[in-house]
Image: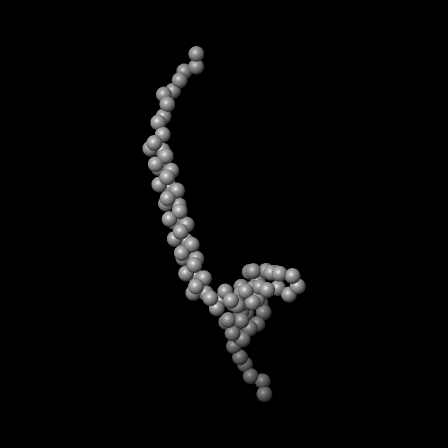
Length: 93
């Protein structure tokens, strides 16, 4: 006897039974072809999903470092402007 079920579709419209499978498919699609022959993207996508918390923590740390780097660059730029003496204008003779 036939019965109904619930599933999910990835961005390409492929059907999957679980959210994990659909998400791995979408991640693999974003990664594209990796390696010669059969792509390594599905395996990498699965690992990305499995290690999501660690990856998100790394990206948060990366964002903090970028902010710190920008602040240091701005501070150095402000110091340089304060230490530069403007020469008096000269008129052409």
